[in-house]
Every structure is written in structure tokens, then in C-alpha cells.
Image (cartoon, rainbow, N blue to C red; front, top):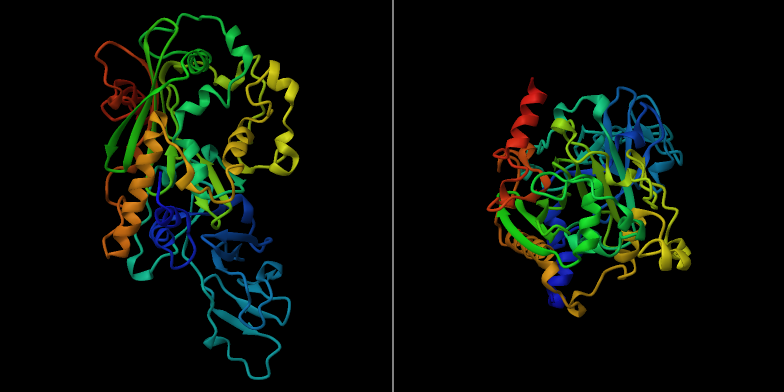
Length: 437
């Protein structure tokens, strides 16, 4: 249970708030590259940390992220003309370049454009995402490279999903391995045949699903790391083995969910404001899976009943609170645990229906909540520390961001899950040698 004061600090992200100040010290996603793909193309609205901005790609391919309101009379620059290396307000023709500098005032008898400059933020394009830094200029940290800087264009994959609740609620779900034994369950899992992988080593993805259903009482272990922490959800398999799913969490809002044999794909939870969240799901490194461990993804199982979101672009929300997430009560009784046909919308239901900003003074946490409790405490400590003048944690230079991974495996006797997915993991070493070779 958090105090009302700590819950306010944790959830509020607007200008001048403690958490907002902390998040502004990191490079965070502003929009997808695909949203402003073409030079002189349509601009994109960007709502970020409570600020209304516009992103556009100019004639020369440079990207600007500037405040939405024209400083003349307040009209929205989203409706502006993107032309000749600037965004021109259609109200009176004032034009702004990617730095926010006014470069033309076509209706003024005595132009004073050199004196007009609106808020703009630096932008870096990497891995299909436009990243920005919104903090103090003199404290701007270098870009943290998780692998996107060298990711081949053919392997770039990024999507964005809009969730209508506070950002911490959404991120809580990423650090909650227990819910996969409930919310995402479906009855046909019982029909998954034993394919012989319920033994120490890497199971198939299909058997992994079966383990979630078999043991809903996961044991949670958390290991603090330089980037935040990694945690394991440990379940007992039908054959009595210990199955570990390891997820990594990285300051301030990135998760790498477990995968067989290991994973690097990231989820960055970005607050648009206090009650709206953008979830960016993106590749940072080439896929490396020696010998095809785990087999086909679990959602390719022939009896898998749920829809999955697109691997790229802005995800269309067909299942919303307004239509009750299209819940099917008959399916809930005989097909799926939730009765909601879309996998990600099951998560959205759970987080959005807690309210726009959940009151954590009312929650009753248990043994499965250890990881999200750790995340809350670390964020609060960092936000309060920054308010006292302390440097935020896990900025560029803190470590090798390309070496952070999730993982999944059935443990042998005496095997330490903390090694899985690290540079000391033999499977990781083999994959890296194959990639480099």
C-alpha cells in the first residue's frame, strides 16, 4: 500500500512534477517514424508528459518536435502546411523550422520573426521510433543504445498502442507474471500434447502455455541489477520441474518480457499525460535463436483463440471500455477465461477498469506483486532523489544496454535462473557468435 502522497508522486507526470522531472531526464519515444514517414508529409500530434506537441519531417528529412500552439493567436500547428523546410500556420502564415524558430511572417508589414521561437525538443530517430529528450538542456544525457542504432532497416519493427489509464497501471501488468495463469488462459490449453519438452532445458512455447495454467501460484524472485532489476516467475511443471520466466526492467519504464530461449524486444511505457499511456513495442537487436529453441510462437498453436496486435504501426483499438471490450459471456464459460477475444485487450481491460489513476491506498498486495512493488519504490526513490539534486540512475554510460535480456527455461538441479539471458549464458554466447560470424 502506498501513501496518498507517494501515489501522487508516482503517477503525476506534467511539467514541474517530481516524476515528470525524472522522466524528462531520459530519451523517451515521442512517436513512430512511420507516423511522419515522408518529407513535407502530414505532421503528427504528440501528447507527451502532459504537453501538446507536433512532430513533422521537413523537406530535407530533418524532424522537428515543437509545441502545438502557434504563438501568434494560439491556432494548432497540427493543421499547418509542411513545406519548404518549415511548418506554416494556416491562420496567418507564420512559419517555424524544426528548431522552433519562426522563419517567416507572410502577413506582417514589419516582420519580427527573428524574435519568435517556440518550444522544441531534440529528436533522434532510431529503430523505427522518434526519441526525444525533454529535460534541461544543460543536463541532456547521451542516447542510450539498446541495439537500435545498428539494427538493419529490414529488421526494424515498432508499434504503438494507446491505453486509457495512468502509465504505472499499464507498466504494473508487465511486471506481473501471475496474471498469465488467469487473464490470458483458454480451455484448449488442456489439449496441448506432451511433446517431451517438460524436462530440464528449453520447453516448446506450447508447453510453456500449459505450465502457466498448471501452476497459477508462481514463486517470485527479484534480482537487483545496474539497470533496475530482473525477476523470475517460477512454476512447477506437470512433471515436477522448476520452470523460470525471467523479465528485465530498465529505468525508467522499459520491460523485456521473457521468451524462449531469451529475448531483447522491449516495451517502453510512455505517459501521454496522467490518464493516457502510449505503449511502444519494438525490436532493438536481430533475433538470435540457435537451433530454433522453443519452436513456433505460442500464439501459432492451432487452438489458440485470441487475436494478436500488428507488429508495426499504431494499433487499432477495436476492444474498448465503451464497448465492454466486446466480452463474450458464452466464450467466458467454455472457451477463454476472460471472454475477451483480443490478447492485448485483456490487459487493457484489467488496467483501464481500475480507473484513470488508481488509488493505491486501497490496494492489497500479495506475494505475486514483489516485482511491481520494487519498481514503485525505485521510481519513487529516484524522483525524490532528483528533487534533492541527486543524479538520476541508469543514464547512458551506466552499463551495456545491449546485454539486457529476458529469458525462459526449465531449470536443472542447482541451475541459477539469474544466469539465463546474460552474457554468461552458454545459449546467449552461441547466439552472439553465430550473429557475429
